[in-house]
Image (cartoon, rainbow, N blue to C red; front, side, top):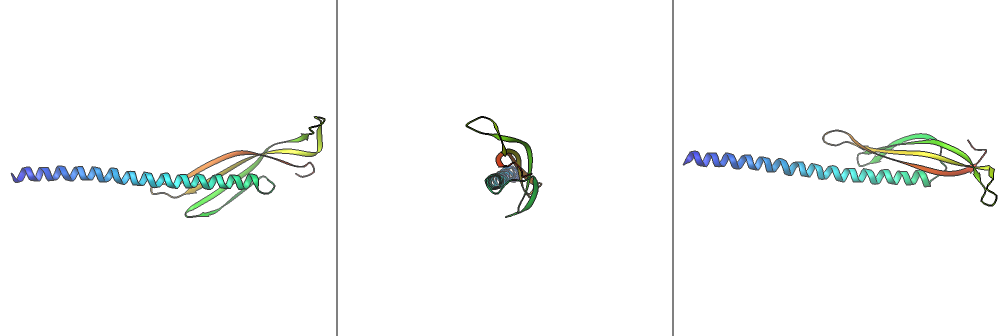
Length: 132
């Protein structure tokens, strides 16, 4: 009788250990998903600020974004062409259209290893032709 109770107790402990491990993994996964979603939101915000902010120039920047997040941005010019006039369809040599590739990477530390998300977009701007 005592042996049967002991075996039942050991089986119950093993089942509780499996349940605890599953619950713990679920909580870690949930926290990781929340941190990833926040990193994506931060990267989107930086992309909007870069593309709709001041005049774009090819450069790389980085910094601390708070709450354990850091960011890096890389802006590179991918093309430049004279702007065509609507009325004549001819190239307007006083203005040009510049296409920039913008990549933002947000990274953070997690329990297992460092993580990061990267978002990339293209931004089209116009500027006077005499600017580099």
